Length: 182
Length: 115
View 1: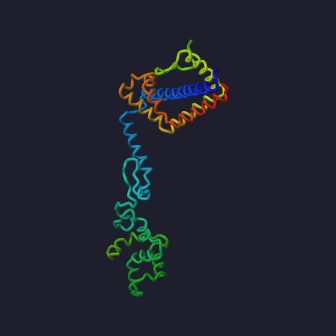
View 2: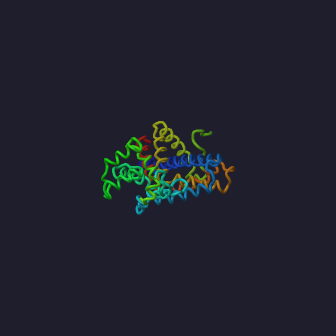
View 3: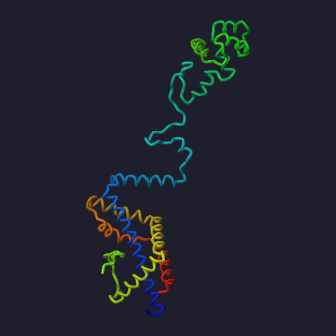
């Protein structure tokens, strides 16, 4: 072979050739892959694919966009059918306990009051069980608060025999509550 | 003599003087053999593939293929046709950084192979 310089130039030449060889191999791979996809129809519709490309570019831009407020996005999440679900359910239906019209999003707190989870609610329910209970209320004292708790307990036992079952009382008292306007 | 290992020369090959071409071919073959035997060819192939995917070159090529398929119709395309269509663009659109990196490695290999 020639001298050092000659070697160098042939080296560069050689390297380029090897490099081009490598690139050609990759090109052949890509062409083969695309050919297979095209012939097998794996690409679905070309128009659909283009549309998806466009959408993915848009989506990528959206993701990369820092000004997008992620919090607001999570509130108005869009599902795969394109429907949005507002954070608070807005459907209105009738409570099966008291019969009132309740907003679905507020149903749980309503049930708490309506079915008697606490003292106040309990007393309110028992207050309207029977006429006798009402009379007793009136007779005892005209205080507007629910103070006669022990009495209401006994009333409860009279009515249903178990202090825990408040819904029965409530159903009995449904009419009364409505009449009372409570 | 058919070189079954090597692919047939690509259409646009433009070599220098004929004598030099013969020597170069032999030299290329030698280099090729050394590359394969040492496993460096495999490494280089993997490196090239990774780099070309990273920079989006492969996606561009696939889009070009798809374009051609759209024109010609899905059933009529051949692999050779696709290769012929995308090779000039493919060779030209390799990013300079990728090319430089590869050339560097190849040259180092040639030097270290003491040729």
